Length: 333
Image (cartoon, rainbow, N blue to C red):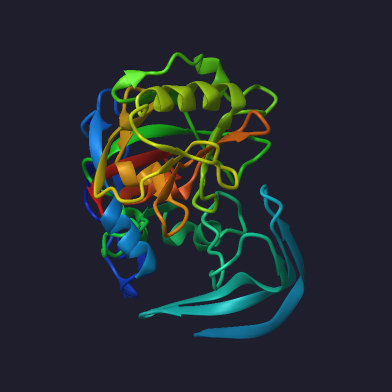
């Protein structure tokens, strides 16, 4: 298992804990890639259908500086408005001249969101603007649906956990704000699906590759990989009653009346050796309140793969931008 070696703490560098709005002392850390770590669950799990359906029902100071702003996203969503400089106050931390966009015309998949916090590697993202105050490091844990738990988002090197499974970030000069990682394969029920590693490789022209993205809900895979992956899952769930496809989902099940069902686990085989195995709620999700559950993956019209936020739920994920690593675990939420 890859561990981070902690050394003596530097002067009180700033760490922002968004959830608690407080300051934390930081330590200098060095991240190394894991060769054998894994985050795993049994090859088959029980999805609590009844509980999941039950849960389904159940200050900024602007300056005078501003400019027009237009941002478009890969799914066709876009926002148009004003880009202004703001002073953010988080607990005792006061951060001046943070560029924030105010969207006057928002279209697409922004339903239920009060805004977007940019965590990409670009200079205008929140992480990029904080710069040396956080050392390019942050960690988050997205709330798992139906667990009643809370999520977290922390900035600063002191927030990086010991005991995570670390894999290298891959730089794409043509898309510097994206966090690319090495994915070498996919697994269903503990068995690796026969998919060529080249399917997930970032080319010299900056095409393809695999991106970690909290702004995309459903993981997208190149069509050839998705079909092999989906077919392997269907083969191991032949005992479950099928339902018609819903929206972008072509593999759905009618679980009305079930209390729980046994489903194969899903695994991501990452470069360097770590295997990230997901809990059932991260890949078989309810799409209505009458028991329809769908396989939460979709084909990508391009060669780009995106690991979305549904698959990231409940897992602590950490980015060490300065040293070029992303870590999975060891904590859950």
